[in-house]
Amino acid sequence: MAFTKKNIPSKILCIIDIGSYKLRVCAASFKNKEIKILGYTEKRQDISFFSNGECRNLPALCENIAESIAKLEESCDIKLDQIVINYPFGELFLSSKKINYKRKLPHNTLQKEELETIMQSVEKLCLKHLASEVDRLYGLSPQDIQIILSRVNSVTIDGMKQKKVIGKTGEHLRFSLLNAFIPRSKHNLLAQIGNVVGKKIYKILPTEYCITKIFQEKNIVIINIGATQTSISLKVDDEVVAISKIGIGINDLVNKISQHHDETRAAIISKLNNDEYFQLEKANFLNIWGESFGITLKEMLGDIICPKYFFVGGGGGNNVFIAEYLQNFSYAKHDIRMLNTIEFVQEDMSLVLDCMKSISIEDIKKIPLDMFVLLRESNHLISREHDTLSISLKTAIKNLGYISS
Image (cartoon, rainbow, N blue to C red):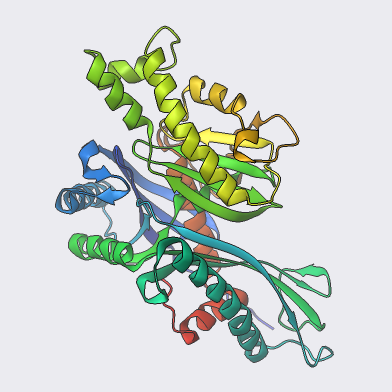
């Protein structure tokens, strides 16, 4: 029998990382689970565009995005029709839940129709749990929220982990499912950005989730200190169990210092790691930031023992005084259970670069970590477009009356 080799076309996407201090835009092609960087650009943003997790100047933000995309289109000589955009706002609700399901006819092989029925049953339980938590914590109804990410983390059949389930037999199924919601108002705002710049949104991705995929450690606390907010991601047993954000960033410290010292922003940032400068302001900042961090981490952990591995990144994560503060932080004061002294780890860039095609040293140096993790997750989503579990989950969400972006 002769086989015809299919010519699978590349998918070209424009990846947009909206930061309160910088806008980063990357054009890339995706084919056969490989990524090729076509172009990259950055644009400095007015820090006043964002405040307390809200966008305060949407027209100016859209103008920056449109200019950056146009610059890439011209330099790469391509048309960028679809965009992947990060979620830059405050409210992000995530639930990771394990659900058991018992099949009535365990000796029959599992087929697509039965899988869709099972997925609808287990996803209904997950969404019901998450919706009740969102309502309890934030007073938002299911009509007020939008799913942006749904993922089957793992499936076991009779205790055996399975990558594919179609054609398998067995009685007891256990699904680990992850769902992430944002307020519908924020989803509409991002959709508006897409409309204004004339691009179709392929996916909205929370960087806080994407970054968890580039660490070898199965249990880790990932802290990303940005200009106006801090995100915390918690991974336990190699699965993301919680994500949260604190409305305090390194810019709060810089602003406080600038009120008392005649220094430029650049000069202040360059001196933050020097113990001789701004001791009082740094101590006050850490007291406020640390209290919010402790409360938030405890809420995320619940009764879980806190992992010993920590990663601190973002614009504020480069400051040694923050790492020292976390090392000496009073975790017991917040009822956070620790069995070991924390250890700081670094990301494993091989988990990103392994799927990069012919990437230059210059690109590795200039493209920041947040952009790399968005590229990696986009590549994963494209590779799973025809995956049976992913399709069944998407169908279940639609049948349950939810809309997944």
